[in-house]
Length: 189
Length: 396
Image (cartoon, rainbow over all chains, first blue to last red; front, side, top):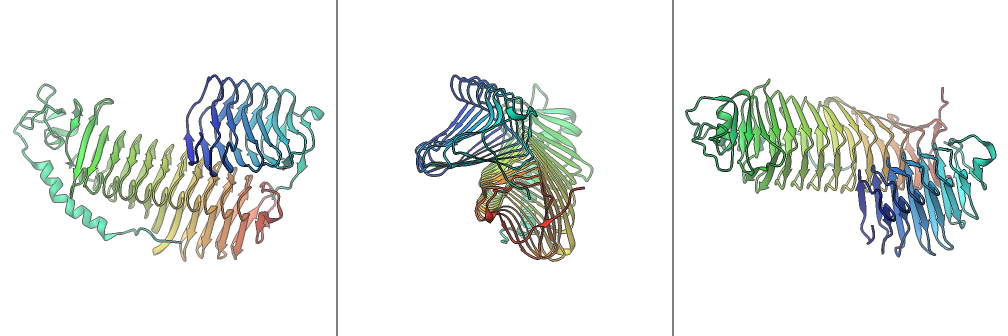
């Protein structure tokens, strides 16, 4: 999905492709891309890859989808350049058994990324279930997820990125290996 | 609050009256003197002087229906146009998959007009109703049950499917597309079920549901319509609406509009929305409005309300609007995520939601309205998350 227009993808499957299942990388503007339902699995690289491309901003949401068994990350959300903005939500989805990260979230220097992951299952990914990495511009928050049995850690905060938790996520329960880095608690209302 | 359409529009009544003589003429013309059958046939190469058998099919639906016993079937043998028709008894019009059964609708004609007995059952399967200056596509008048299966109604000047008199209407696997007004217009004390259907790019609303009625919508989409995706508008009596696994996105105004507007007495609307997506609408995602003696009880659960240009979910005005939102995502909406404003009758309860990254505030309470929270909702985490006062309630 390039260009500048809003886009909707519903109940569709992008599976077993040589590289990514879905790439969202607009060229201009601030498009809204919504994905509802569907499957993005068994691809040769990431299941879903989202970055602002050459646009000022990308706004992305994923709802009720399955992202599994991809050969890299399940979902990559990356505000990959200076002055770019990424706003994203992932809800009620299953992100499982991907080779690397379940969700990899980050921002490059000068970029900004705001993300919310809620009510998802993020299990059995090869590296980290939920990763927030990069600069202080990367702010991810997690609410009400099941994040379990991931290879390296269930949840990881890396570098200067921010990872807010609302204290209602269910991790594996193995103590120190559940979480790497520093999580910032936020109160539920 | 804006009134862009009106229930009880006298134009709708006049539309029936104008259409009736023409439709009856289509139905009654040139009935041949052949014995009737339980199953009759039409074909592009047929002739209305034939007995409507498989070897000697008729040309038009109207004549074939006249040759068919009550509860019988009219089968379309090949692709072609079969003309508008009035249906006055229990009968099924069936085009098998792969057969295009077209009904072109010209000016001042309805495409398919059901005017049968109060206990009659009508099935329309596989029809393509296409406007050529005509007003409404499928008009459901008096009937017991009408099943509209795998049909397409497009390019009408008026409404795709309009039902004001039928007691039970079911629309399954159908598409209402690019009609001038609503995709589906349903009014009256009846039941409507919409399954696996799309109502898209219509000139007014995806679906209008009004007055005392029972409605069920499952696995359907109401997207990119000029006004609202779904309007449930009760101005008298009691209406119930259940929506599951459906989408209301990209509409010109509101995704889902649930209104109780007193016309007669104290109208009540009960609405349950589960696993619904309402995104990218140009106003709010889900709007609940109760005026005066109006009462709306609405539940939104396990749903996704994002990127709307107004509120994500809003309850308002001076009637009774009881709104519960649970297990849902209400993110990235422009004005606020959840809004409650108006009188003391407006009460919004929030449990186990993500309400974050909205413009303005995540949760907005104004006036005498109440927002109840249970310590289970995740807002953005900034000082501007909440405007007004939240009422904390303990979980039991």
